[in-house]
Amino acid sequence: MRISRRAEAIQESPIRKLAPLAAAARARGVRIYNLNIGQPDVATPPEFLRAVCAFSDPVLAYGPSDGLPELKAAMAEYFGRYEIPLRGEEILITNGGSEAILFAFNVVADDGEEIIIPEPFYTNYNGYAEMANLKIVPVRTHAEEGFHLPPDEVLEAAVTPRTRAVLICSPNNPTGTVLTWEELERLAAFAARHDLFLIADEVYKEFTYDGRRHRSVLELAGLWDRVIVVDSVSKRFSACGARIGAVISRNREVMAACLKFGQARLCPPTLEQLGAIAAYRLPESYFDGVRAEYEHRRDVLYEALTADPGILLRKPRGAFYMIVKLAGVADADHFTRWLLSDFELGGETVMLAPANGFYATPGAGADEVRIAYVLDADKLRRAAEILLAALARYQGERSTITYGA
Image (cartoon, rainbow, N blue to C red; front, top):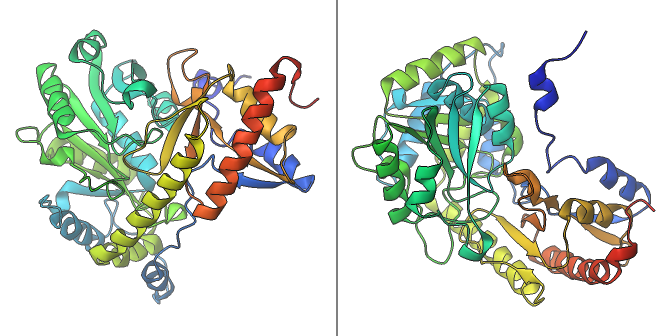
């Protein structure tokens, strides 16, 4: 007997794979600042939790496969605040943004076909592509350029007869980059030129900084039949465990196909949808406060880290992540393991995600880590102090360090 090729090939999560080392460090009494995973400590809105607790039906029954009509109406009203008109039939509720991406992949391409994605990218796209038996074709972006899109000729070189879609994430996980309107228009022209779908992961749309406004691909003129948006409440309302996402498209054929996938898994969770309805009805002032908090955290961490000339970092413009290039670190995977197994400062250390897992190109990101600034400002200052001390020691002793020694 053997397991499937798909099961053997699927990527191990660079975000979660160090959990055993972290558990061992905690068992030794080491305090860990978790900057490896996008789990905010911002409180979930109490309105969300009250709506879940208020459920009083005698039976928790199946709901509609495409989601509760009340939630779709609340989402349409929410997007209307941003002058993006949507109808209920253009929204399908999913089990988190993860299922939304998986649905989108399965709708736009067949076995062995290709999706172009600028890298570094959210690492779980690899897993979804493997489950859908698709191939990701990476297009490289660079820290020195703020991880913005490369020139058109680089995009053109990635196209093959098997290309079916291009996927972007803006604001971006893992880089914090926010694509400009000019970049979105370039992508729209690129998709139309090659008859491709444009999939946009916009789950961080509220989190843009320095006065910037997020622009959705749903605002692109003349592209209604090509655009698929992935949405989620996980980060928007600090409700990662709720697992409520959505596929949004004005293409009726796409939505009809997504509904069939939705019927196969029956329905999204009912209680969490009730919470999401309440959350989507929150006033804009809710996002003003949360956005200001994340922007402050970004500034604190950016200023602390860039005080070290051995760190290359462009200030992120959105989301709550940054890719940090580390001078003197040739293998960030080794470095992040060493932080947990062999380093502490005053009984404390930090947990990071090695960035190579956010690339599809072999060898890319070897000297980079992803940091999620999801802790409060004081904890981020301390975490930066620990990281810089660790980096100085690692650079000075690299020739003799072996983690686990």
